[in-house]
Length: 153
Image 1 (cartoon, helix red, strand yellow):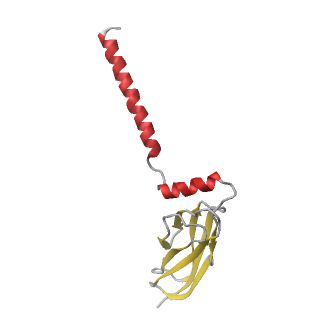
Image 2 (cartoon, rainbow, N blue to C red):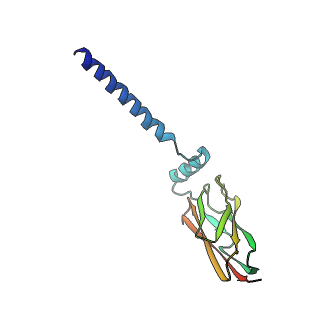
């Protein structure tokens, strides 16, 4: 092996080591928090244990409100399952915003809330908006709905 071949071999070897390190490093990035990951793995490891979100109610009617009024409602729920419940995401279609939802796992028997806010500015008449809640439970998706009758003032 001459000098140039030896140098090329060294460069290729270093490149392989660096690429291997990147793959190993990327494997740990972007993972859930250890608490959320542990909860998901413990539920996945035992098929008899599963979280379940039981909401007090899935719809809320604000009734008549004046145009421009901002209103909010807390959808309360309990984890009635026997594994930690994780809210992966909560998003609205349009017209309302999800102000707050739990980011940490909710233990079995634990209670929490999802706050939904509605801004009636520029609206009138009957309004119906929804919020899609994605969880690690079965069913994985819950649909929360708010309604209001927006009156011009």
